[in-house]
Length: 218
Image 1 (cartoon, helix red, strand yellow):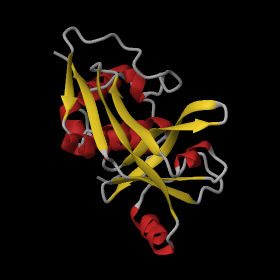
Image 2 (cartoon, rainbow, N blue to C red):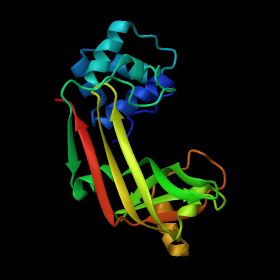
Image 3 (cartoon, rainbow, N blue to C red):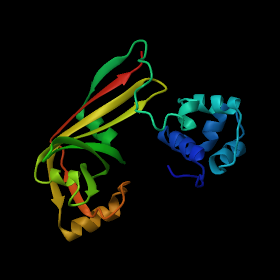
Image 4 (cartoon, rainbow, N blue to C red):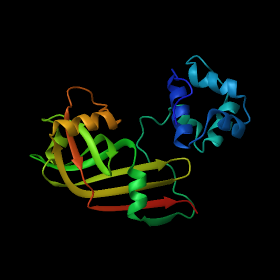
């Protein structure tokens, strides 16, 4: 799903991101919340918008989240601080579901061994042809994954429902050096390192083992 128009305020970005995570259009959210679609668009796009608490409560419920999350009050806090659900269920995920959850792009964590010892490093990744790809710099810690069997982990947490899932990938990592392959990755991958700078080294992890777990509220 793409943005109907580009939000310019932090609150607008969070609102649009959450409804896109749920696969909802603006009209669908407005109908769920009982608010006017035009006003919802105004809040998404105008950083000067100051809706009242009633609006936020309705929209947060429609988006299955909290007012605090939408307004960025928990942006600097670690995930998972909400109370556990009353009757949670922990289930194993089959490999095909793990791959589906991995698909797309986002932030994952790659485990490497450095001179100072083991390290787990976040990277912006994408999935191309069922392989994990990411960009890094030659001197950066993620580059140490090249030529080794590595572990790569992705998870998502829903604070509002105290639910979430995690997927662990085990497999060989290799640097992509073929010029044609690099061009193909540039064209197909959406990943852009948030850290910025010169990060033109592409690494690929081909999954050999996929495992995952999901917590759902009872």
